[in-house]
Image (cartoon, rainbow, N blue to C red):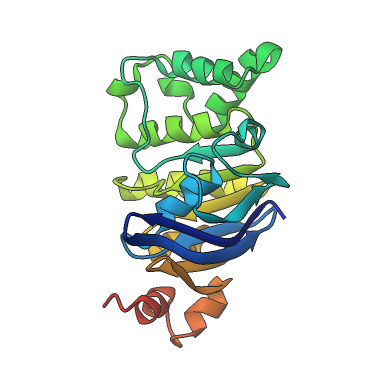
Length: 237
């Protein structure tokens, strides 16, 4: 398995963000990790990536245990956070070269930058400053930095937020293409996105897993659409 969470609990003061969360995700799966606002999605993703640590329980990625000091584990992961932090004053190619240096790609640096620019469709924009790009192209830059070191696991938190319909389709196609070769966990509020690209759905609510299965299995819980099952399970009508 690529990602494993076992009895993970995390609290912020008196508020329990994650409550005994367990799941596994295997290589080649694109899993939609969905839930209402404040359900614990981003917290779980930050624990997987090593930015947060759990109060109890264990997370491993490709057999390596997650934690604040897990440098080797972080090399296995490509992470696109919800707010997609970028340097607007840097040029696209310059920024990706900077990220490649962070991962110490050495002699592979130039090839990695060229490959990820082509793969994410950034070729026409590679000479522009990031701050001059459209939201769709900034998201592509975010995906490019997550992919540049060829990670085993991709963690994508609201990767298509704020995009127009055409941009959403482009980013979905890109995620589908890269997901055939690695493990992807995708957090989103867009049910159509989950139905379009995910093979499996994990629903979290109030810090607990309330459903885990294929898109078809979860949709069948309400006898209709995935969105109907989501509302039924979370009480978000």
